[in-house]
Length: 518
Image (cartoon, rainbow, N blue to C red; front, side):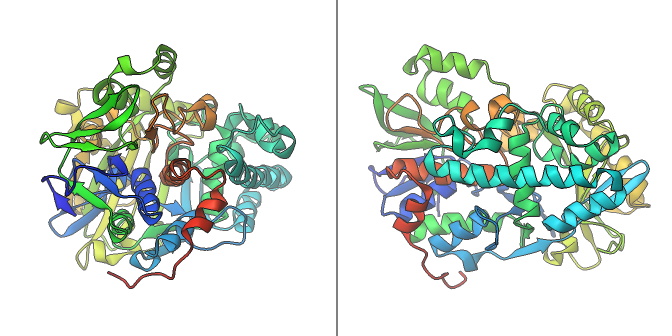
């Protein structure tokens, strides 16, 4: 990779602005297809929210906890990350560890370690709520049907956009405007059973009463049907592997360099200007950065049709997050501590979400990555990452950041006895921190929030009204999360190459044998 210098040439087939996982996916696929690709990244490493950072002897993932689709699976539409890495010839560059249980849910009077397979998932919930067994199975079956139909729909147009073929996608049409809560209420009577099935809502940033059921279903199935995985050595390895794929196929990744302007002349994209003044010509630019910044700062609002800008103004960004990174010398083990645990003080997810908006969240997710990957911390120590959602403007982060970190540690200490007295390292990251490192407006974690009206076709399309300017990542279709942005990268690469179906992309690029480990 090159650092804060000039690009090696002044003309590329494709320029990708930003190196989040969606942008890297598109860049690597386009380079594999023979396009001359340049990726420009302002940070000193690739990955966006998927990057990792080191503090002394500790290596932390900044935001990503788990991913699905890392191995071949029996269910149609699964294994997306495996397909991507294998096609690029870099599958051997990444080691994924299967995580099972997928997560642990802790409520005031109940705790459940959730198995990471379809039958185990259903049976574990049905054992706690035997009178709801039929409804639980029906909900999971609907989730699996949505995942299958969404993958088939992506072959025709865009995930969740099935208006042109209604007879083939009955489940997508039935639930296209539904929230998770509405579907759970149709099938399950017990409020506690419904809350338990909705435990993973923080992964999408909205509670069951507001989150898209379609998007929740595909996310849940990416773990339960495909298997949940962590990346050995941190998720930076996954991002670095995609960057390797770009470079191996004659592409270029330029770090510590910013794009000052995306050039639009004669009503079409002409290239970019870097902060150092270098002008790079390209008929195709992919923006993997904040869409509002793309429109207002990099291009200029006046270049877009009024209706397009007005539509953006009506969209709602997601919440941001607050993260506390810890190291402890407590002797944790997988027998007593799950890799991913959700702690909720009540069964009321709406109340939990309201606390996020006030800046006073009383719940959190505790991730223990070194349980499965001891290389992340020195011997005798464990890493913990405490995560919750917050409004970016809820409190004065400059003066009160430490108070929320203290509150998170106090919550974790109730279940991990002695944690507060056995800390070897702590550091907090507020929405201001997330915004500084990723330049997502107000530290938005998922781009636009993932409500029923803002997923799939409810999001801006990958192709903008300006010819040659494409979008990729969580501000465009289909939505946020690792699986979503990787899907976005695949979708955008396919559009740039003029391929109608995703299967054509894999057939065109082939599936070479994995390259030797770098």
